[in-house]
Structures are given as C-alpha cells and as structure tokens.
Image (cartoon, rainbow, N blue to C red; front, top):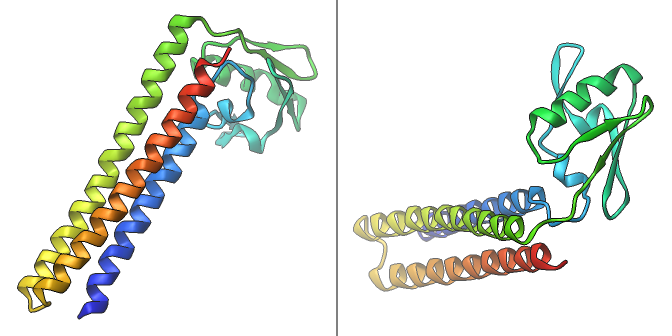
Length: 187
C-alpha cells in the first residue's frame, strides 16, 4: 500500500509540473515591448479549409527587437495570415508588402506596462490555484489511505512531503512572474 500513497504524490507533482509549463507558455504570450515570435503562438490561420497554427504555414522570426516578420510558405497565405493577426486583437497592425507580413511592435506606455504586469500576476494566481488543487487531491488520497490502514505517522510524513512540494512550486511560480514583471517594466 505505501506505493499507492507515493504514486499520489508523483501524480500531484506531475500535475504541478504541467501547471508550471502552462504558466511559462502563458507568460511567453504576454509581450514585454520586445518583438518575439511567441507573441503569435496562438494564432490559427485557415489553410485549405483547415484551422492551422501560424508557424505551420509560415516562418515567423524577428528581424530586430521591434519587428516580427512572417514569411508564408505560399504567397496566397499572405491575406489569411494578415486577417488572422487582425482578428487576434494583439494591439499590433500587420503590414503586407506582397512578399512577407511585417509587424512593428510599438513601445509600451507606462499604463500598458502596468496592465501587462497585472495580467502576468493573474496568470500566476491561476497557476497557484492549479497547484493547490493538485495538493488537495494528494492530501485527500493520503487521508483516505490512512483510513484504509496506512500507518498514521507515515501518512503525516507524506502530507509534509506534499506541503513541501507545494511550497517549492509556489516559489517557482513567484520567481517566473517576478521575472516577467521585470521584463515588462524594463524600458
């Protein structure tokens, strides 16, 4: 039976890792005033009737810290790419020169920077909710195991292990959000 309790902790740890991974992806989409291909990672373009991620129909790169260039594999994709970027409401205006789509990233205002910091913190808090949910599931499983005959003192040690794991993940979230906040506020 002890293997079962350890499995619950492993499952909780995997769920926490997934939450951190999701947080990193979310933070990557929040722009910090610098051009990044990640800003366009959620853009879906109609490609011969199928919704397709932008990076599968074009090469997305940065030519400098303020410019993203999108080179479609096929020229007939220029208009759908441009339309998808407009519809994504990213606060940027794509320009189509007949060969590539160019996006100039405007510098962020102080007010916009503060909004983005709030957004990053909100994403961090949502991730903490996921971490706490994984902790609760593991704790419930340990309590159930103790009721089912697992030694009480061993159950307490496992609960402490889950608490320690939770604390480590919450600290990682705080560091990631703090790093993104510095990135956003740096002019």
